[in-house]
Image 1 (cartoon, one colour):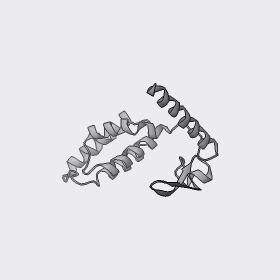
Image 2: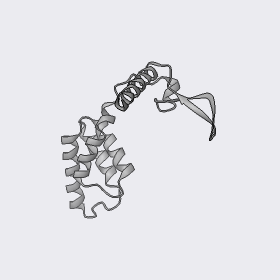
Image 3: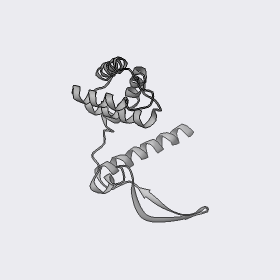
Image 4: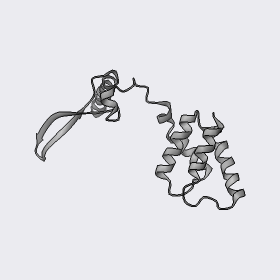
Length: 141
């Protein structure tokens, strides 16, 4: 892993409230952050995902143990979802759904629906949806 990435991401965490004020305490915490990132993250991208997660969810400067927990939590996101890349159409929508012009009128009113894209990623997601639905049906009976 790139030590520059670890240093930059560690300093991002130090911007959260309640970071140590004394320089020696900051240096010690930065050193611990670096050790935790090296021991528990698989790549520079994983380090960035962990810090992004902590910056979005922590209300204070995290303890090293919280970084370890976050590294396990975001591990799947860093590894990717194992699906083909999103096409130009569905990547604009986040790669999972595509808005469509289909309107459904129900008892609670009309609403627009989303569907899976027709690209390789959308087809793989639709197949995963189908398998999950089959599993749910088997569990019922």
